[in-house]
Amino acid sequence: MRFIILILSVLTFVSPAVAEEPQTSVSAEVFGQLPRIDGVQLSPDGTRMAMLQSYKGAMTLTTTGLRQGEVGTFYTIPFKEGRYNWFRWLTNDRLAASIRFPEERLYSNTTEGRLLAFEWDASEQINLVKRQRIKGYWAATSRTWISQFQDKVVSFLPDDPDHILLALDDFDNINRPDVYKVNIHDADRSRIIRSRTNIRDWRADQKGVVRLGIGFNEKGKERIMYRKSEDDGWKTIARYDLIEDDIPFTFEEFSSDPDIIYVSKLDENGRNAYYKYDLEKEEFIDQVAGSVEGDVDSVDIDEDGNLRSYYYSGVKPVTVYTDQKRKSLAAFFEKKFPGQSSRIVSSSKDKRKYIVLVSSPRNPGDYYLLDLDKKAMNWFAEKYPGLDRSKLAPMEPVTYTARDELEIPGYLSLPVGKEPKNLPTIIMPHGGPNARDHWEFDYWVQMLTTRGYAVLQMNYRGSTGFGAGFESLGD
Image (cartoon, rainbow, N blue to C red; front, side):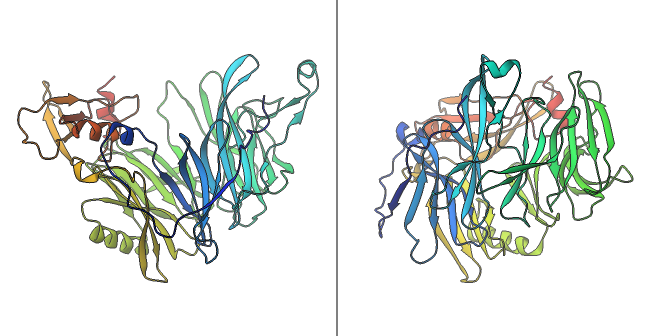
């Protein structure tokens, strides 16, 4: 087993003062390319950015500064093998990145996860998990051992910028992780939570206190354990059979109240919704996120444990903001970019700078930097700069009635400049399981429409996002 993925090099380059207007087309080569840029994140103080950027056929991490003297200089870290799973700013100067890659372990093919930390200029790179020395039978073939997945962060410890909490399997308790406090500069670690029988997932609150454990055994019996504070004992708040029982709820996040958590479950109409749950009374309180159009896909909880927004895919993607500032920003985006989807993807800690992604079926994605102090919103990058957007087709929501009178939703994309009559048509059902089509840029669809084809995508019975009843019709 390799201890760390070898870094090929650190590339430093300066962008030209004036970028040339890219040549655009709708060639297959352009549709087949990786996005030029994706996943942009601001540093906590809003003075630097990190992003994934295509480089030699792979997405690699790139950083750049926004302050005078740093603007235009980029640091890129390509890896010999593997791919970035996620990355995050730890401080204003240091980042962590999860890398996934194929490997062989005990004569079996595996996927491995590693966690690296480095400065924003790509210096001082370290693997955050050191090898563990082992004894006994396996020591005859390997004197050291390392966790298969080293990137399961339990908390980024907002009040301790030098440490994070990691869940790690040891050689003697595989799939029953301990929780360690790990130094992000030298990888020294100390155990703060010992493994418990069948607990496979640990969760911490906004202060970094580990307060929830989720696990199951080989028979499919699951339980959820909880403690009110690090000084209290653990107690089981739920037990159920993963196969035979209805899952009572899925934990999402802690709230600002130590007795209240956010959970998801089906509402009275069989659609996924989010609720507050009282751990002491063991009962649901209020629904905080739901939609009559379909399942709520995700919620955004801020660093204080307050619900900031939630997202669902109706006919078009919808983000519902619950705080007044973001509601005002959403209204501004809707006015500035009518007919498109605008989403805040990152912000500075003081909420004065935002990264906004604007997209639609005819727009693969534009990134903007919104600076409230300067009262300015500036475009700075697009995902597919070589694509001729004028030839991309709109995606129209449609429905049709099946033989049993069930209404099936879908999307129809027609080639630009063609009369919508007697067109060659591609029927393109989505894959699965647990999938659906969305109102969004789809490079397969657009490549076909630019060749003169109409494309019909149907969310057939069994598709997700429309409630448990619709999904169960596909069984």
